[in-house]
Image (cartoon, rainbow, N blue to C red; front, side, top):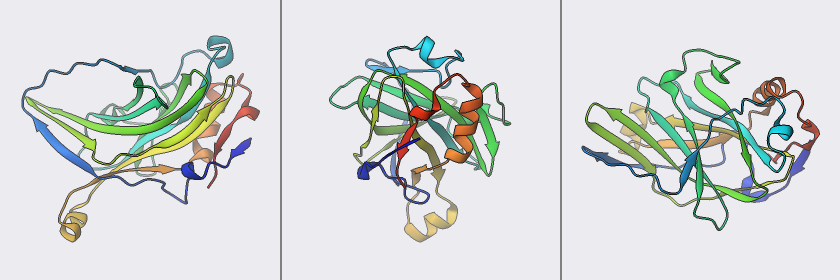
Length: 216
């Protein structure tokens, strides 16, 4: 495995980024998707290189800490640096009830989440935004990040880059009492010991010596 030393993208003992989210409640909404595409989180093809010969692969997991209340969608947005076109990684936690190898879901350690492998053209990318979406009857609610941020990474042809576990957590009642506001947070954890063994079993034909990752 190769170790990328990009200081802006370090995983520092548990989390890299903590963001607050501002809440917007919409009672009637028409949603138009123009320049955003959503991909299945795990390709069906066992041989990634044969299926995507001109691509590199962003790998990791997306999760939410167990809570009494979940949003319907947790979305992470990715784009090539300098491009307006974006892709998103979406977690549907209400659909995850157990760990399932075939589906690539996990329900353990106080989390429910999903592994992901995203084939991308070679180039420099960034994670730059996220949103949480809830649909309760006619009350549509979208929580979005209110801070600009960038988590850069590089995708190389035929190689894998491990981003980490993208983990959402919600404020507790004690947090609200102490700070006077309710916040949701996005953190990035290094969960290679859990994520990579699963992905190796899922894609045994891949050349795992190409794997690179951010330094701690």
